[in-house]
Length: 116
Length: 110
Image 1 (cartoon, rainbow over the protein chains, first blue to last red):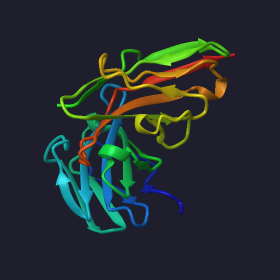
Image 2: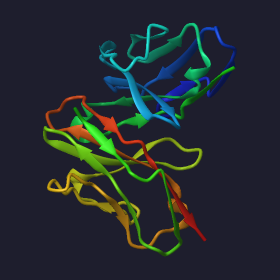
Image 3: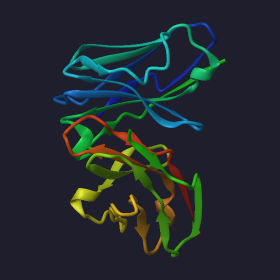
Image 4: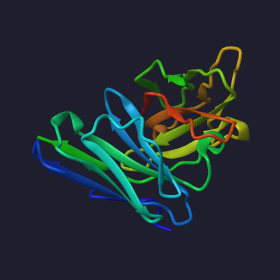
């Protein structure tokens, strides 16, 4: 298994443009998470899905951010319009079971977003 | 609410020296603690979990509920230990409450 696959690995865009980040979780994993990593705030959970259903999106910063999971093998995180403060590394992670006890999150390599 | 603190953003030690990465937490429930590591150009990955009481790559961590701490220790640091380390807090109620600390960058000098 190639693990969690994210694309693009790097994205440079201009303020105001739409950005779409993509994630393919590990097959059979029922949980999918989107995290944002910045120097100032560390790793922040944005949203997570269970069986393709969004369960907790309280970490999504504002309405400019949206996430979808149309099927078990694909998820997107969209920012529209993008702003310079959105510049960060966005990680997708998946898990086969609730992480509260196992702590077993499998991370992708991340998508580094730079908004000019 | 769950909260994890790692007081040091950067920790530098010499090769062969002992290393301790500090982690403190606050949580009213039953905590489950973990350490994640991110080596340069690699994925963030689970290093160890307190429930397993394991030693991974020479690292150990003991949960001290009295001091609400879960410090990561290694008696003799190696250069390949240089990485970003995150402490994380979960909940043994099989929930999805899972919070990462801000992280500590460990630099092991030759």
